[in-house]
Length: 566
Image (cartoon, rainbow, N blue to C red; front, top):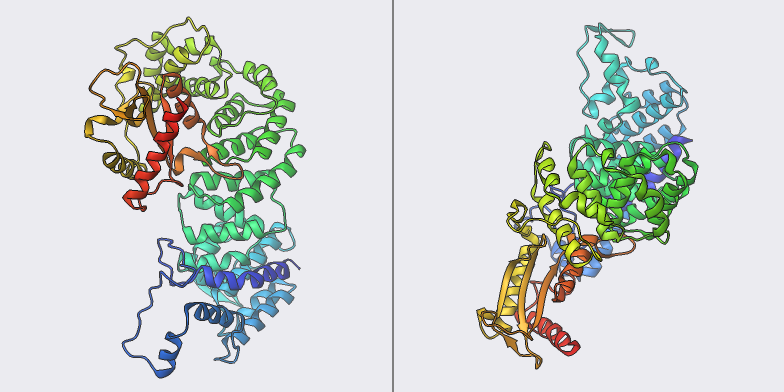
């Protein structure tokens, strides 16, 4: 029955699989263009009349015909499809180990796809204690399957009565790996594209194991990850809490964004979360992964908040601090924020952290949530803290310096009646190198090109300005009350000061409820409190692929809106 379920899932998804994960896709994981691009096929120099006629078909008809051919594969072309279907049917109907392994004998149509299905069924049966691995681990037919899937099988001294003799003790260990290491049955095949086609043949728990091991090996195979995402998202079976945590961990480790898979996992977490009343580690892992992914789903974040409040007695300090950091990064303030502050925040003390940088991150997250207290700010802005931070193994990193500058500015501009210590004017914290990633710098350069065309001269704007608050201002310019640009090298006390800030893909939260992330929000708050009118330039509105005139008109409309609001 289990084999039938897996085969049914495989057959239903086969059309999609063959179209989306063609073996013509390059190993680097470039997805097929929906209209048939990115192919490595070499076009012949001459064409038959029939081929010429086909080439003249409209593209839409050609695409339709291609998909129709996938649905109507003719099994009589050379008999391979018919033979493969018969093998699939035998696998479905097999009830014993011998029945499964017997399919491999004298069967020229037997492929790696069939081998993977058989191994998956055997792994499932052994997990359920329906069979013992000792019943088939030395069977020559099973060893043949191992070799087909790319697994290394140790050499033996000979074969007697169908059994391999002279095996070392390590052989049994490696073969029994099929119980727990199902990844090798997928990744052992020739390439990522072929492995991606086989994902639909394995069970949901095995898909999770495949994804987890990809993360452990830091192997970011795009075709394989897309196939896993599609099949896990399509599964009617729900993930348990541990499996959900494993999938999110893999996505965050491999920096793999998939909104459909994220929605599936979050829905399953909400279902399984109330049943967990003992362990906070798995909840902490889920929270941490959501923060790294910048995946913002208000429903799951509220559910996690309620769970932490209800089970605060069993929560570890690192799980609670992960909640605050993730909430800050995702710009999420719970409807129960007051209770979060009184019950969860108060339970965390500086002594809970082994590294001073972790305490700094905790205090930094509280500023974005509006929960920070004067005692928190004083604890990290004192000269003593900087000396202690230098004793950390990593020392005072650039990230720590920028967070300290954020906090120093917050204490001066946003903290009401703060009387505690501040960073010294000559503090080494101010000496921090800052630069945008390459992708964002491209957007910034495109904006600067438009500014040069819009403003009278180069002295009417500045770029890459160090704010001394822990971030760069992408461009600064001044206007008078009549909307005229002013030179920056002359004093203009009544000038309208404008800060242009480019917002790229990494500056926003993804998922169900998209918005600017907490760092972006804090940056804008500090700039506005410093007297700037902030103009966000988001990547989905302003593109370097647009003509220069369009980009100039975009900025001009933003400047007019600022001047009118003054």
